[in-house]
Each structure stands twice: as C-alpha cells, then as structure tokens.
Length: 399
Image (cartoon, rainbow, N blue to C red; front, side, top):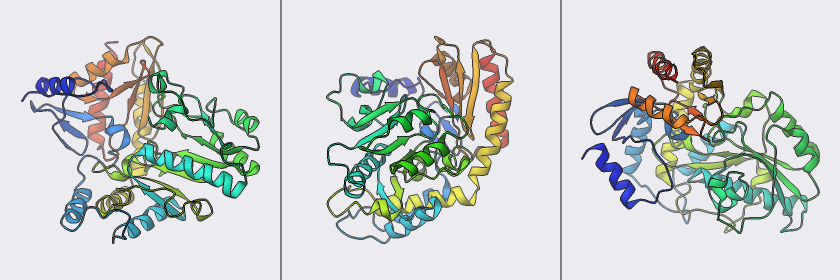
C-alpha cells in the first residue's frame, strides 16, 4: 500500500484525537525514518523525546530480543529477576533511594500526585480530602482526568468535567506566586522544569532553585515532571541539574523506554516512597521483565555514549545557527540542549512550515499554532545536524 492508503485507513477507522502531518513512517534507524515509498526524513521530534537514544538502538534491541526469549510478563503478584536490577540502576542514575515503575508518563504523574497526597495526610497531617497541589499555568502533564484538571488548555480539558479538585494553577516562572499560595493544606508543588508542550518555555535562571528553597522552608514536596526533559534531552541528565534544584519526587518516562516500550516511573527517597503500602497503588504491566531489561539498556546507552554532553554541544550549535537565519516571521529561538523551539509571530501558521520541512526531508511538529519544536535523537551526528540546518534555513527563508 501507499502512504495515502495508510492515512485513509487511520482516518476511516481511528478516533480523530490527533492531527498528524501527512507522512507515514514504515521503517526507522537512528535519526532517520522512511515512508512506504522509500523517501527518508530526518526525525526532529523523536516521538516527543521518547527516542533520545535513536530509533532501534542495537544495544536496546538486543536486550529486548534476549529478554523475549526468556519471559516478558509476570505481573506484580510475583518477583522477577529483572525488576530489582532495573530499579537499582534507575536509582543510581537519578540519585534517589527508591523507584516505583509504571508504564506511561501520565501514569507517572498520577503516581506522583497520589504519593504527594498520601504523604500530605500521613506525614504532614493535612486532613484527607483537603490536600492541595500547586501547579503551573500552560503545563502539560498528560491527558488523564487529574492531568487535565491541572491544565489551562481548552483543547485538553474542554467538556471533560467534573474536574478533579485540589489543584491550584499559578503563573509559570513565578516563585513568589508559589510562596504566597502555600497554605496549611498545600502538600506539593508540581511543575515541568521546562514547559515542553507549551513551546519549550525555559524559565529564568534561579526559578527552580527558588522553588526548592521555598518548598523546603514551608514543608511541602517539590515534584518535577521530567518526562520530556529528562534523560539527557536538555544537555544534562535532568533539567534541574542546571540549578542543582533536587526535587522530592521526579516523574520519568519517554526515553526511559529507549523508543522500544512505554516505561515510566517516579523516583523519590524512602521518606516519601514509604507511603505506598501493598494494595495502595499498582500496575499489572509496571515493572514487567521485558520493560526492565529495555530500561536498563536504555540507561546504559545514555551513560556510555555521554548523550548529555552531546545534547549540550549540538544544542548550542543549533540555537546559534537558527538564530542567524533571516526570516521575518521568526520572533525567537529558545531551548536547552536538543529541546528547542522556533517561535513565530502571533497568528502565524507554523503548520505550513512543518509541511514544507517535511517536503524537504525533515520532520518536526508545531505546537500552539505559531511554535515549532525541534528535538532530534541525541545520537544525531554532526553531518546530520548540518544537513538539518540547511533544510531549516532553506524553508525559513521562504516565510
């Protein structure tokens, strides 16, 4: 079948809850993908940062294949011989004492919310039902009912009420607003260190550290959603490392699965994680041996190939060169590491730029109408980056 045949099938039999670019991916390797007609593209979305290690990294694929010959799923009714080593590796990579594995990023956020609420009642003493979590406007923490109850995006929350109570939305990058909003019922502050879906919004330097100090002084938990920004994407292992603003809970996902499987987790120290007791939270697939084998291999690739350093240096190059491209519609370039965005003038149709980039052999996706996010796999080579920059310049000068 041709690409249009696959698109037609999607549109005919699928729910229309996405608006993808008119391209079909049939094969992929490292930083490139191919459609059924054989045209290749540079992938500059990386499945929203889930493919930091590149498509089908040989080390990760080998780990998955080996584990598939042994056992793939046991449930949490029994121990398996992969979960313990995986949790140990994840704790060592992140610097926390304990981890709780789940599947999707949204589940990691839900787990963090439950941990914070239970901690608030059992440790801090907030009466159950009165726990408050402070979050940021224009956030994206997934599309579960709890997540959209924190959202300020009508596309995410429209007509899904009633919404979950207990969330207070405050301006992003405003530590003073957080400090003023904390009261006796506040149990946590939950934010993204860099707002990805909002258009790669990087807060001013010092914001994360200020949040950490405020939360510590006021006795509330600091929770960072590093699902998109984590695992070397921003030029550090985690975005909070830029300010040494260690949170009490970190939500993880996407690149933890190495582009092979959905794997997520929260990490925290024992003082927080001990609020979970048998039966209080769980997942049939969370911590399954196949996912754990893949997760360990994914962490090994990040560390062995020093993908944080690669992301940092290539990100510097990307921003410098794109800033120099002449385009009257372009307002700014922002980002950290290889998580970047071009912001165009209000009302500008960034979709049209994405289509033209696709026609020239580069895949990226717009967000909020006038912003394009650029996030290639961290294994991208210098020659591939130069090729991508030539394509971006060729397209931008047309606009």
